[in-house]
Image 1: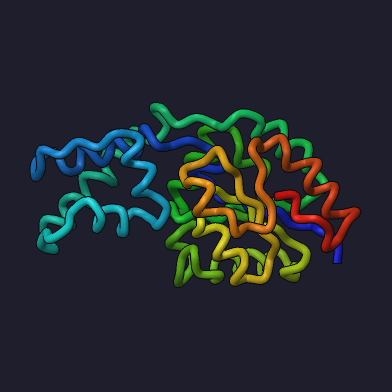
Image 2: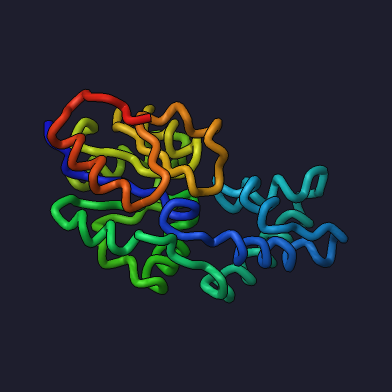
Length: 223
């Protein structure tokens, strides 16, 4: 079947939100720890959703304290969601150039936050569906959110590709039976994403790759 649907990850793929997440983390732990996170440390922690993120930064903490850290993080992050978050180069031009394809976002960020980021950065109009970590019963690397998109838009797995920057994206795509494209400029090192079907260094590389897939089913992986 021909390719008809492109599913994108959000953080580390379409947008760089690492600085805003870092500031929210530092605000969240301030009353409980002297530790302060850098952007580089933050990008190694993110990717599995906010609850898992808070677990990682509060090892050995009791449930009550962890809940307070979560509350502080969420309050700060929602309030400062777009202070420093930016769209990666070539994103809007690429999305506009893929107007013939249906497009979706599957993020491990909560759905309302994902939609706020997309709306605030002028990207929401490009997407038919936005799925967050709380939209379905399981988040990436589970295939459940990708299957939800396929079902909602009435596509088969071989009509779709998953584009992301992490092993969670690649693993979710493979488990859902869709082809996987990993971007090398995101939050994860190449070793974590080299099992993707295709690797691209810039989002602008996506258009020629998609055209190649349309005309060359089952061809060279391009890695």
